[in-house]
Length: 164
Image (tube, rainbow, N blue to C red; front, side, top):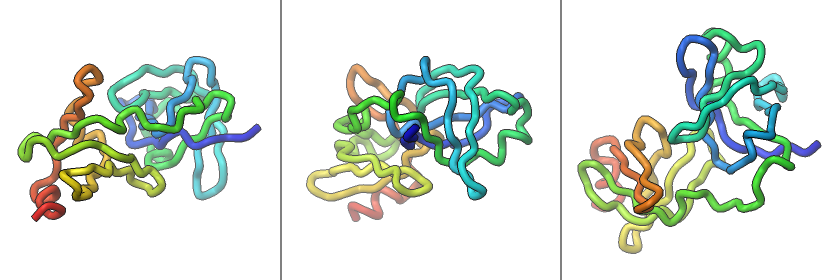
C-alpha cells in the first residue's frame, strides 16, 4: 500500500480523545477506515472509529484513543491515508477564494496553500504583491463557499508588514 499525506492534527477536541484533522488533500473519509500518523518514532497506524465534518476538516475518533491524554501526543503530527482514498485533484478547494480580514478588509486572492512545513500558510496576491498568512483555524473566522470568501482575523500588523 502507498500512503499519501492528507493533513495534520491541529488540536484535541473535547475530553474523550477526539482530534481535529485539518485536511490539505481531499479524501474519501467515508470509506477510509485507517490512517497513518507520522511520528518521530515512525508511522503509527490507527483505525478511525467515528468522524464528523467541521469547517477545517474533520473531528476524528480513533480506536483505543479515548482520553485527552492519549490524544495529545498526536497534535501537530502529519496524517496520511491509503492513496486509493485520496482524490486525484491536488488543487486545494480554497485556491481562488478571496481572503477578507476583519480589520484590513479585502486582502486578495488565495493563489496557493503551502502545507509543506509544520504550519500551513495562505499565499495571497494583493495587487501584485505576495502576502503570506498562517492557515490556522484560530484565525479563520469562516468560509463561505457560495461567495468564495475566507473571512479571517490576522494578528495585528501582519498584513501591513507585507504591504507597508
